[in-house]
Amino acid sequence: MAASQALVCSNRAFFPTKPIIRCSKSPQTHLSLPFFVKTLLPSESLKTTKWVERSSRLREITCHATRRRPTSDEDLNGNLKRVLQVGLWVAEGVYILWLFLLPFAPGDPVWAISSDTVKSLVGLSLNFFFILPLMNSAKFMLCDICNYLLGRVVGIHLLEAPVLHPMSEGLFNFVIGWTFMFAPLLFTDCKRDRYKGSLDVLWGLQMFLTNTFLIPYMAIRLSEADSDYTQTQSKRSQLGSVMTQGASIVGLSGGVVCLVSAIWALFGRMDGSFGGIAERWEFLISYLGSERLAYAFIWDICLYTIFQPWLIGENLQNVQQSWLGIINYLRFVPVVGLIAYLVCLNVDDEL
Image 1 (cartoon, rainbow, N blue to C red):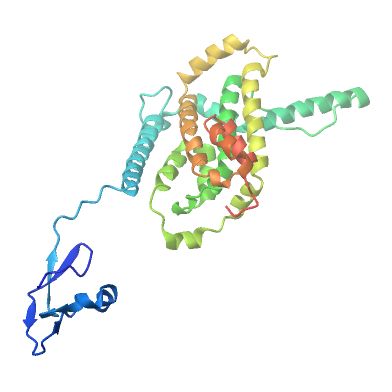
Image 2 (cartoon, rainbow, N blue to C red):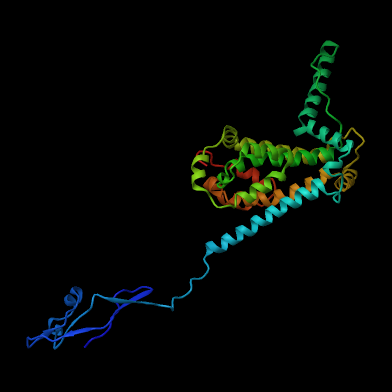
């Protein structure tokens, strides 16, 4: 008895074109079966009246009932990444147009900037991290001691710090201190090699123009990894090595600057005519609604609040294992989460 039998179990099944039956002269004929079947069947079952030989010519039949493969998680993640990438590039365009070029936001656009805004920006830059005001205070203390001991002023003349409203100084240094702490986070980012430019230059420009350059980096790091480029770009720069090895110092220093900035905004220059907390709060509201620089700082704080947990969450493998759970929760707290990440960074491993 001839029966068609599938030889291969896959999307394609192979059947013989037709069985070939030959009559044997012997009174007993045998069915020619594969060797592995002969070993499994009893010898009595191999006896039959006809001998069937399969033709070597096989006809290929395609199975059209193959079930369609569902969309994989990788496809979903890829689509999400593309959506995020497009959204970030749109945010970059809006950031530049709204804060730099268009005249609709509070304050002056960059092409019509006033002399008062330039003067304020220069003064804030001179009071960077409160270094110059603190140096002036140290000089005054030294002069008082010298007057007491020697009866005359002895000391080196220092550049006088511009006297600005402490609220504007506190807001400026708070954002810059937060930006300063982003350096080790960028240099330890697991996807930093997808950015083919210099991270040193990127972070240097970020210190002055904040999210103007951080938003494109966040978009570029979502691109597919280039293995050839990654192998040649894995070595960290000298600045990156210093920032990574001294991550805890950077985190604590930046945290102190942010804390001092908040205290300075509320209680700094109390001997001046800047009023108490209520008057300073009123000035802040007016400042945000009239100065483009202050208005941009609010944008930066909002974007940093998004980018900080995003970057830390994708680099939790860099944190010491004992602190992993705590950092995973603290990363959502502005400034504090970044300080915790830098202090608990495992610098012994190659990042």
